[in-house]
Amino acid sequence: MSGIYLHIPFCKQACSYCDFYFVTRTSEREHFVQRLVKYINSYKGSKFAEETVETIYFGGGTPSLLEPSQLEQIMEALHDIFDINEREITLEMNPDDVSAQFLADLKSLGISRASMGVQSFEPELLEFMHRAHSSEEALQCLELLSASDFNSFTVDLIYGNPGQSEEQLERDINKLLEFDPPHISAYSLTIEPKTRLGKQVELGRLAPPEDDKVAKHFDLINRRFNSYGIERYEVSNYSLPGKEAIHNSSYWEHNNYLGLGPGAHSFWWDESAERWENEQDLRKYLRDEDQPEREELSLNQLAEERLMMGLRTRKGIKKRELSERYDYKLSSRQLDYLKNREQEGKVELDEKITLTDDGIKIADAIILDLVTLH
Image (cartoon, rainbow, N blue to C red):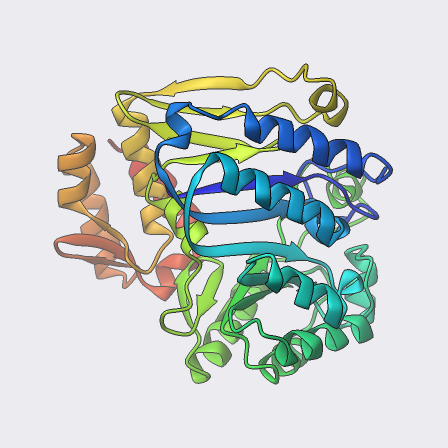
């Protein structure tokens, strides 16, 4: 099994862009931890506990709102039930939760990789995104992280904000690169319907960023990161060689994983392939009343998913893999389409299909066109 994802659904406040499941009432953290441990124990003796676990990922929400003692209970339960031979254990954290002692405690628990949600160092952008931390806290946190025993960490950055200038983005990049991050996740701001930003756009109070401006931000990020040897290996992920995220990469390659916690997704492929999502309802989860929605996936669905995920990565997708693992052959219309995009400099086509930097800018459109043409 590639890994286990644990969704910790607590947040101090709602970020304006976030559409992940979370709650801002943090009083139920201990009850949640006890329920999560019970849920982990329920896998004892099941087929899911037979495969070796290589990665564990604490996401959210804000996992850093849990106490080290609570994280220890979760880790002990995982080791009791699953065959864990970890290559990577990641915990997402917000700058305002971090101290030198907290980082030392995480390291002692076996957590090997920190994921820091900085997003920006610009005060007005942090306010726009409704982040709980300040610019000063973000810088202090990165200093603590650099001085800690964590030699593997990643930092989140968001670009393409309405009103964000290239100069502001350049300042964010400069400050971030001072800390020699081995990995960076740089996301173009996405305005989702049910978020605070989505409602502002719907009411006409906010205009989404223009595509050409976002493209300029993307080019700036690519150029600056590449000059430091930090290369893009997926649409939104950049790393030094050998520092790519193992857990996330396994999602893209259809490896088995379990999602624990309200709103978490799981994927399992043995005789058949199945995906399920836990209900996004903490109260039901705590009462043991959640009913995961399950979906059985056909080979064709899996092939299209693998094509979509593969094209978002630097590795691309091998035509032979599509054929042998998914029984999926590109149609003549798809091949013609790819050859046309190749002439435009957006696709590289040989034994595998990969998108160039120009192609990555419009990856979603290319992928949609390609899948539709099958």
